[in-house]
Length: 380
Ligand code: ACO
Image 1 (cartoon, rainbow, N blue to C red):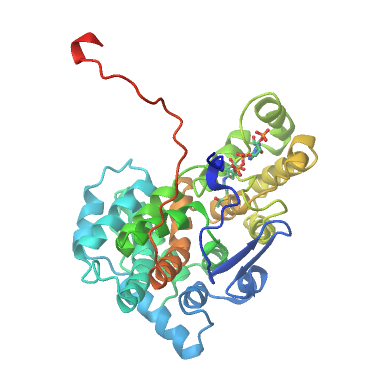
Image 2 (tube, rainbow, N blue to C red):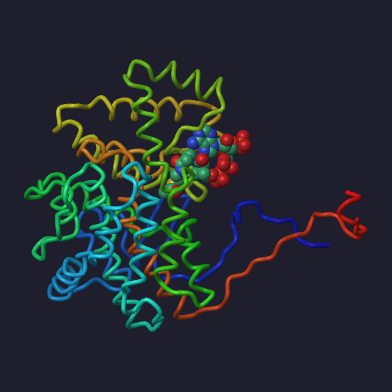
């Protein structure tokens, strides 16, 4: 008798990994031995990328080398800029990112080289290039010229610079850096798993990252940050929260986007950090409305038996939506910004997969019919 299938592969361990520990019972997250709270407080995104790729923190010179390398590699090949200009302006930004990263492989001299050295070079390059694609696409779709990356800025600053064309705002750049640090890595999440499955066949890093982007796009995963913001916008006013919750959640069949998690059965530690940052940013911006809506909706869920029984808490996407909205990022760019960060984790996992590879190929229980007789086509 075959084992029953584990729907959604829940609880199935598929690899040994040194990249991060996700403790869902206690709501703890650790990258390479460092708590997420410590990293969010102290680290530059580039420092986290170095940590994930090298299993240790960089010294000052190593960090500066990586920052400069990512900034230098962030310049896009002419072919990609030309392609971005040719894409339909209304295209979904995640579909644009997926397509552009796939096209990058066509002009990357390392694309078919799966050696450790080439994979490290590609990880640096893709981290810079994805940032530039995100900023460039947001300008191109509005009829503006893309802005080339600057060599003197860190990745968060460069993103804000390339997005706006102005000197990067320190508050917005710091918020982006915190966001990037918090989302860089998260165990065997769906998009990371997809990347590892792809490269475990002996395929290449770009293909793995394209799989990751396609998987992150869905609303049950990275797409939830944009969906959460659309939900807050639909609610419109803090006073509307109780009625919206009753009509759509209690009496309707909708889910609260940005709440619930496969692994966390306690508060997602990233949500706790983001809540504080989102609140501070909302206060300093003079518009606390969206933060208040999010907070009141989370409180309504926390007081509700259904959410208590199922241990459903805000996840990383819930308050990050408020944080990104407050610094004027377009809602449909939220998920590409998630990819801008998670590229560090995807590439760390791809490197780890190549270092100890075996084809990932699970099994399935066949539940279809057996022994059917062939019927000629004109007798069916
Ligand atoms: N609102 C209302 N009910 C919910 C929610 C929610 N946000 N999330 C889960 N539930 C309920 C389900 O209806 C189900 O109830 P049941 O037992 O009565 O059928 C129960 O909680 C378990 O839900 P599953 O879908 O089985 O849980 P799973 O682990 O498969 O899914 C997921 C987790 C996809 C994150 C889910 O909680 C969800 O859809 N949340 C909203 C989307 C979201 O925020 N996604 C981002 C996740 S974090 C990330 O990827 C970065």
